[in-house]
Length: 280
Image (cartoon, rainbow, N blue to C red; front, side):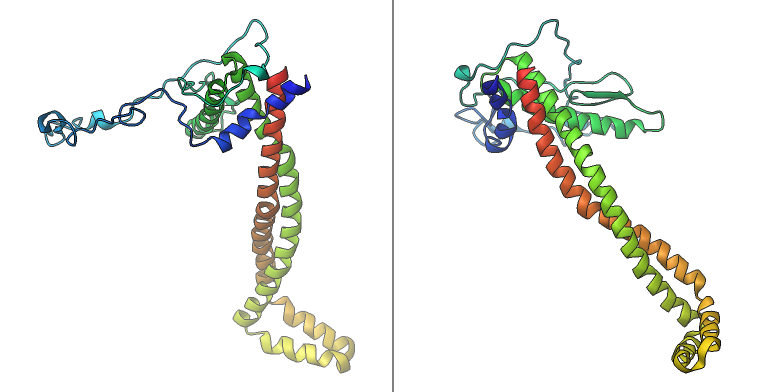
């Protein structure tokens, strides 16, 4: 079991260390020993382009990328075979694994799935699902390229991506909340000060405030009342400045603490998920 757990982190390591290894099947002009380039090492007539023949609005339709092939969510009636470390090998070219298409109106990030709320636009949902499915398919392809059984490789890939999401949420969200509180308080203080200055200048009470503040040491309670009266004219701009500063500070604090924490949590969660997918 411990050996299987160690093997579970292999897809994550391969994704980084072997990123330059070609895992796809041979492609003309890419993986062939003698690339064929139209117009270079073929007769001119064979390599000539027809792009100049514009017959209508759809004349360039053949340049559009082909729709990406997808597959449904795998269903296994029996547990996938375990990872056999002795059978693993260096990456070899394999057929790329097709991304998994989730059911309609479903958010799927690896093995994490949940119904999407009606308020979530379809283009955002599709973008998240597509990005997660592409990463999952790449990990599954890399697993198969080193000799892991296809069904086990699928399970490792799904658990890795789902674990990365869970790790990012569990670590990043609390850190972002802490950063937002601290940043909001600091931003409110700075914003209130800036708003006070702006208000004093725009309302013409700057001179009265300075005079009243200078008289406080000797003027007693009367000078304090005069200072408060003069400063009251800046209340609106001071409050607005505090609100703006709090918002900016909260966003900055959340980003400063939340983003690094989420990244670290995603790595840790991905490794944990990979190990889970390799053993369960």
